[in-house]
Length: 573
Image (cartoon, rainbow, N blue to C red; front, side):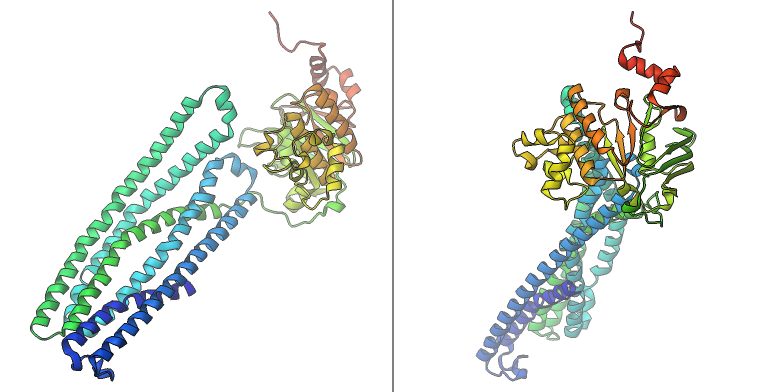
């Protein structure tokens, strides 16, 4: 409301100079019989001094309100841009993992960044332009009908055609800008995909091929923009031609009335100047509507994203971390990412609190899927998954994930310092606690060898650290967070033997007195687990202790022999 008020006042004072020019002409022509003389200023010199003072005051006020509306509108645009981006990001962050697996990061980035910025650009200038054009039409119309009603309608003759043309323009340009925004999302998606996989591109010397791919997407974006530009560029010239009709009619009709003595020279001067001030700003409607349609295309994409409902509703039951015992039960659990393609089939596993349980099996057996179900990235399609006797679907999502810590084989470190990454789960942790966690994870020594110790920047995704170093930072992060349930997903699968031994020593310390679920390919890391479950194609094939499973000569025993060299996993010719 404040920004709108300043815009209207700015345009009001901006329209005053033509009146002052008309008054000046009136003083020169009419002298002692001028309009100002009737207000108590009979002397012509005094009249001109009054006009000069009014001119100074009006220009000063016009400049003041131009500054104020510019500041307030632009700050408003920045505030709305900020709030909309945060609201959209917060909503996206609450969506289930499946949503992100079906969409590109670049496409989402286009909505969160480019589309939000388009709305900011319209509010920054377009909203003020619309208000000022509206103010111009109202004020100039009032002046015209006050000065010469018989001529006023001629000045407004082009306005209905301009409004009709603007509506037609909006309808035709809207789908073209929607196509531009969609193609921008696809281009961003491809750019983000390539930048993330730059190491792979380089290793396969595929730079040329990827440049061609980006060039192709960029050309599609260019073509979508070209179609929009072709139409939007035609709007202003056509409007100018229509405006010419109104201006010419006012010029001639008003001139004839003045020559006949039916219209004062000063009034005619005001009408000629105000006709320009009325009609020429309408030529900017093309640019304003162009900004508006770009903003609407982007806003529709933002609103579509905000209208996406989370697929995993939050449960009502709280479970504070301090009250979690750590019992996990899979009760006849079945799950598939797509209907008709089950990954887990009627699986029943009971994990006592404080125990170390291992889950093993060949690739594709469903081990990682169990972790996603446990963290409630997905809901089971049949059966129930319980924590301390509570169905996960009944518990608050935040409480479930705060109770479970994950050390994954695919470690993700954020761009920042080693300290910040270790303290990610507990940003308020002291330096002493961070160092203690790093010592337990056997990461302290290598961290001290880094250029800036704990303040070393690890790079995006931790690319400045080796795989083993990233893994140990991840373990330190879990140690500091101290969850009641710890899940280790192939925590030593991609490191050398020395690093594996260091990580194994760390894990032996941090798994004490907490429920630990270990997903492992290397069976040597889980031979001392309290209980081992063997999966085959989503079903429970075997269970027991290490020695019992070896004695049964089943799947586990076969995997053990392959890993220890007692059996050859493939035929050698």
